Image 1 (cartoon, one colour):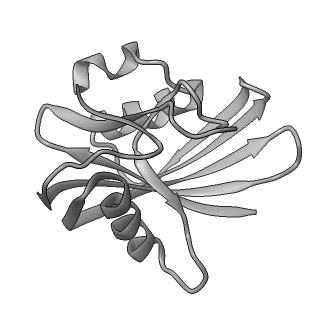
Image 2 (cartoon, helix red, strand yellow):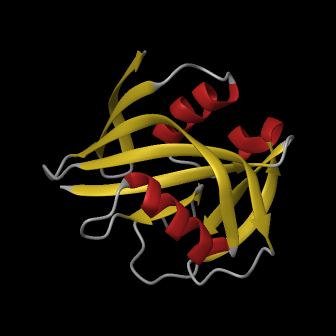
Length: 152
């Protein structure tokens, strides 16, 4: 089981997204994602998202909101729990990332990107400013085979 975070940094009309195209053997290669990564031992999701955002973007989060949890269930039987955050209060200078290319993507263009099918489900929830959510995404390889959404 893996514990990870992902953050969608919001500048009003766009989210900061990363095209994963620099890391070898990356399951996300060629896909656009928010920024984030794995929790380290003893780290809270909040500590992790702040650290990962800074490491990947050079930006520091001043405020952030946990928006939901994703249960990622691939067909190999492994699980990943992803804590989803957004932030519209941050500071710093955007830097280059060694995992992919960073770009501000207009919110009305997000669904045109190369995204995981399941990401479209929770991105729509973020864009609709939905309440806290729990999303389960089941995959067989790259194919979304089942999904469920619970809003709180």
